[in-house]
Length: 233
Image (cartoon, rainbow, N blue to C red):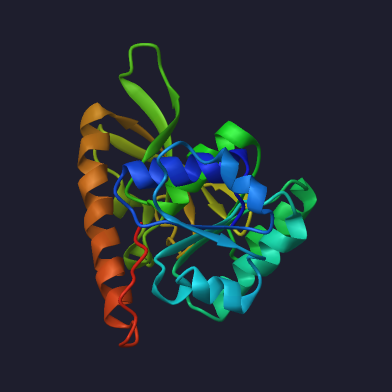
């Protein structure tokens, strides 16, 4: 939802990765921001309107990003999509940092600013993509953040670490970051911040991909019959 700078960039990146995209905007002229040759579905209307969401194929969606220029519109749409339609991955762009903290505590990931937002939303939409927050000049060590796959809820910190290759340095839970202890039990929705070297990152990516595939298979198995369109992330 939202075809401004962030929405159009997200659409281009996701389409380039082979995903099926529907993009919603209340302003017909906003679709001019899309790159030349964009072939996915464009829906004119409000993203918090159930009929508009249905037209965009929300009942078969694997993920939803609310990135319009209105905080209220984004959060209403995000909550509607998550709570009524059961879309497993939802993220909202929020300009007001005070509101963002509140919505984080409601379990809705929130992000802000244009380029940083695009990178962060991609991380939530495609959890197997582990993006680096920082790399040392030699690229030997990276600080990365990942959204904990639901299948890993209940793991202890030490189960996620790897000797000499991967260390969990902090966890953000309900909008608050905390330093971890080895026995901390991870919960669904946690954002996990890790220090990794290249072998540790190479080990982590397929682990997340396998967990993500299990989550997607479970979601597909719960879809009602009669919906042929799938929007995958």
